[in-house]
Image (cartoon, rainbow, N blue to C red; front, side):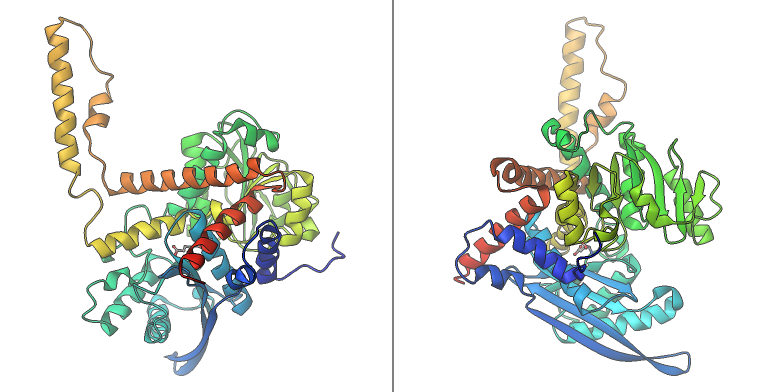
Length: 476
Ligand code: GLU
């Protein structure tokens, strides 16, 4: 291994797409139309900072407009370049199709180390970048709707939304120009946790199918399963936290920039996150052993490996040494096409990125709909639902008294049953439904077709078929 050249990120996505497309019978030329990235806009802009003009390079790539708006985050990182943004935009197209979010695929990036700038400077830079994109309709509710990604979050999205509003003062749907906004700026409950929550729902659904578990040589439930997480950013943190607190998995290792924390008894995720936020890294964390070589963590024995940071961390170079029987791609593109081939041949089950991390864009979809409808989910129904449930409870109690029964409901029944769903519960319910339905569509293809070796190929096939159907409906 290692003698074959490692493909770049975009080539990697293309290779995976190509493998799946070879199993379809699309009309001539359509596969190529779907594969290519429609356009990538590069902008270089200056901002006066610290007494001089600093020049920044940013991108917004539109991969496919078979549905509009196109959707995808904006990443702030030094490694951002055209190849990466185009690969990520392509993944957005397929991701949206898999979870039936009615969007095309797009992605943006700014070549910047956000830690080098203070809040006020970041605001100036973000507003200027947003200005450049809004001016060219690369941010607008009906055509292109960004969201957070690595290095950005609610704060940046609020600046972008405000910038758009300043430039489009009469647009009644202005808030729908970007998702991932904070609650007070038109955001939706549950968006910050959404990608991690989606990873949890994906795993829960996978564990509902013993036949699929058997492919990974696993059985039983999530309870007690040993998990290794690489990257405790927004996605890794929420996935690890929910899986350990709510499903009883044991997170035995967490990898970060400055090494890894190892604890066979289970790492306390909230304590570790708090440590990282306060100390800037994992070093010195008392709840586990520090290992300097964070990358080696990927090769440790565990039941479930969750790469939740960067693309390309599992490559031809280390794929042969990965021991986890099940990998969940919480990050975008953590496994290169070369590594994917090696792992797939070995029978490692991979829950692929275009499904596993689609929770973010799914809840973005809910936020966009909320912004367009100008009303919070549940506002009309919640109390009416509670009133109807009260009727049932009253009647049950009357019946019990009438029968002279000593029956009383379980202590928490009334409280749980009577409470109408708020926005957060509705968002989680919609996300759970989305993740279950999408998994079932994938597994159907995986099991029905002997020529489909793995879930990634199945996911691509589901996506390609849906994108092809909308192109064909458009007369292309
Ligand atoms: N950046 C996230 C992703 O890679 C979210 C995209 C969105 O919500 O539009 O899926």
